[in-house]
Length: 360
Image 1 (cartoon, rainbow, N blue to C red):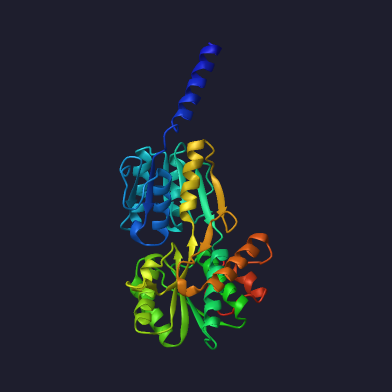
Image 2: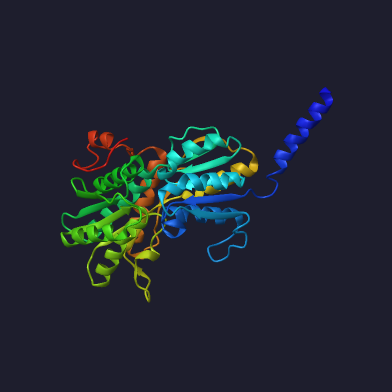
């Protein structure tokens, strides 16, 4: 009997191991902005495509190995998670803290299901991997780049803007890092901020960017999902009209979003803070296939290629790119301290006072 039981156990373990001899299956869950948000969700989707060897233009395994489920309204988050869990895909991925409560409710009901939630570290369940990022490090880099460009342009007393989506710890890391990068180059520089409280209303960011640019703001960094594309659209219009203003993208490289002169490939997006959500999705899928997938938080920082800046815009200049890369090396080496909380950065006099950033 013992031998039979042991044989059964061994066969079960072998079957479980063999389940991932082939690539695991995955479903990506997004909010209403979908995978065409040209930011956060798009980056997660690119990581999935990369894992399967597919591209944006060629997706032969979509619908079988992987696919996306978009919730048109927040009340669909829980039903969507339950649906894909019932369908027993090997991994269920959701992007953003808007899914945190839904995951916390549903994941315990499916203890055998593996989940990845991105930008959340509060769902402490054994079957949920939580991918978070050192946004402050990547944002520091683009803040320094924008300040260096303003100095190179000879702009007197330049002002800088930040547009966030919904306030929270992740948004604070974006804003505080950006402000630190600016102040590291231009001590005493003014930074203004605005929170749209929405991820999918570009008209809000466009209106705010117009007001700021008209009042003399040199550069606007938007970390607000699809909402942020409104600020890029405004910068695009103004640069096409000859105005020396810039936008900075977030999450994905948003250079193409800012192109205003297609013949010369000129873009109003000076640089982008690239949050390598694709790195996180590839990491989780590789761990699943290797049998090393574990619940808990995994932080992706500059050292692990979790955050970066885009040097695609030639108008940034080789000298500035070299300086920002040197700053990145110093961050990785621990020579530059980048604060993730507003209170700490303010106490160190590394950022201006009066910002709306909130520490959770």
